[in-house]
Amino acid sequence: MGTASEELLKHTRDVPDFPKPGVLFKDLTPLFGAPDAFTVVIDDIAAQHRGHVDAVAGVEARGFIIGAPIALALGVPFVPIRKAGKLPGETVSTAYALEYGTAEVEVHAGAFEDHRRVLVLDDVLATGGTAAAACALVERAGGEVHAVQVLLELASLHGRTHLEGYDLRTVATV
Image 1 (cartoon, helix red, strand yellow):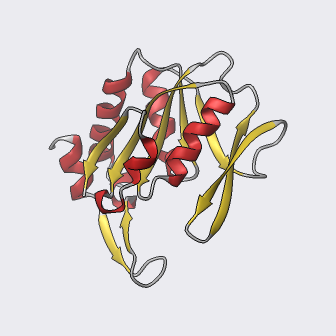
Image 2 (image 1 turned 120 degrees about the horizontal axis):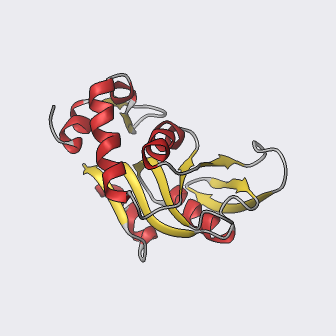
């Protein structure tokens, strides 16, 4: 087995023209289907944050796949950040701009009352809008963003500019 970065890159598949022409989609499902490689990545991320966070917040949907095992490895709660209208009960929400329109994400109200230091987690950092909205949402809901962790950063899209002031960590950058 290689490093977390090597295993991630080895198990990432490029899919041209998905979901629309001109987009080169980074498919991480080969990583999720390779237990040994996925374990290397999860263990590496968990080691970086052990003892520093009280909760892991994963962004729908692939952030759930990554965030839940990291939360388990750290022995802390996992908090889902969902698209609007998907959580029962009282929620806190934040709207953010997309390339063509807006979107909204939400968490349960009180999700961070007893779990203040939060690791915000997602799979790919592209333009940064979703990650920035997730951080704003965690803060609106009473949490403190310890760090933003992504598996893969697409450097050419400059998403990190939307996360200035946050500790942004990536497993690999392409």
